[in-house]
Amino acid sequence: MEPYEKIYVKPSFLKTDHGQIACETCHNGDPKDPNWQTAHKGIVRDPTFPDANKACGKCHKNIASPAKNSLHYTLAPFEKVIKARANKKDKGILEKVCQAKEKHCNACHASCGQCHVSRPDYIEGGFLAGHLFEKKPCMNTTCGGCHGGRVYGEFIGANDGYPADVHYNKKEMTCMDCHTGREMHADAMDVGTRFDLPERPRCKKCHPDVVSEKPKTNSHTIHRDKVACQVCHAVANKHCFNCHVGTDKEGVGCSKSGETRMLFKVGLNPNKTKDRPYNYVVLRHPPADPELFDFYVKDGLSDFDKLPTWKLDTPHNIQRITPQNKTCNNCHGNAVLFLQEKDVTDWEQKANVRVIVPEAKIPRPIFDRPAIRP
Amino acid sequence: MKSLLKKKGYRAGLIAVFAIAAFLGPARGYAKAKAAQAKSECIACHTDVKQLIRLSSEIEKIRPKLGTSAETFGEG
View 1 (cartoon, rainbow over the protein chains, first blue to last red):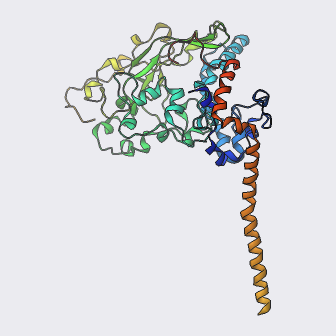
View 2: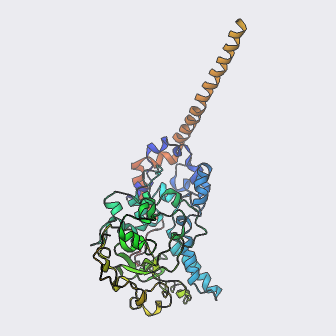
View 3: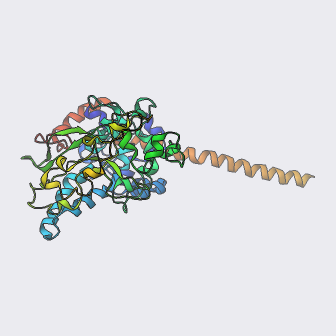
């Protein structure tokens, strides 16, 4: 995007309701000063962050009030995960971990403005459409701008050799068809992870038969409540194995992450709930590393093995037919699909004890039954 | 009969006054906003592509770089 495009205001914006509000009401600055340098003194680039209510709450209180506590605003689960793993015995170390988290991890937040008016800060901003407010922003710019590394790439089939999600490919669905405004704007201060958000998408909303008492297919009857939908219907997802953050010679934050690998690993469900009663779920290794903050402080994440490094995942590359659901024995007895001790590095064994599938829990091959239709 | 017509006339007059006020009120507000917009240097500059192209190159020189560090590598 050219620099001028990022700040060009379309004249049509001035005819909209938001265009009737004087610029300085939200952005400060001096509208009478013809010198751009002095006119921009005290300018507020994004008036919707950190307080969504300040600019939006007057007219959109019902949305802005919970949105300021939403996952995109607060990234609250990051804080919970990092604090769980941080060295809590030494307050000085903990403080440095929190500062590093603030500088690197919290830089990824998004605000009302960064979804509905401009591109996210993570990709250096710029108006989506000449300052026009987009109720449903364009998913490849807005969602893909931040989630392009993994989940968006999976969804649109950007990973060589792996198909796009059937919802995207065949039904032309967008991110927002499942991830509604209700979910995006929901207060998430009390949730542990995004998977616990009551407003999250659910397959059963569009596929009620699958989880009904009497599903139409044998495989759904047999596996209902035993395996997560993605165990049968997702393909390989992208795994990262380490990340180190720091500051370069010019004082700009930088990160260094190692190789990424496309893998498909099924693990035990470490946290069974009424909504997620499954024995097996799909896992992903995020860029978690005990030396993540070593540039700032040594031994910052001394409780690293408090949480699994192979985490629950919901890959966004859903297919009706997948390599593992073609026949019963593509999964049953196929140990490679399951996360085993040998797949986990020595220092991660303790952290992942609840998700590693012991040999006895790998489903036995089925010899007396013909292949059933998935 | 005459007084009834008089009453009706008053009522019609009142309705007309309210209708005109209701129509002109927002229109005046809109005109006010338009007038403020016309005087705003923010709008004059941010809707002028030529000006923005010229200024943005100046701004790029002095603006602190928000971008990613050259030392960053790997997928985010």
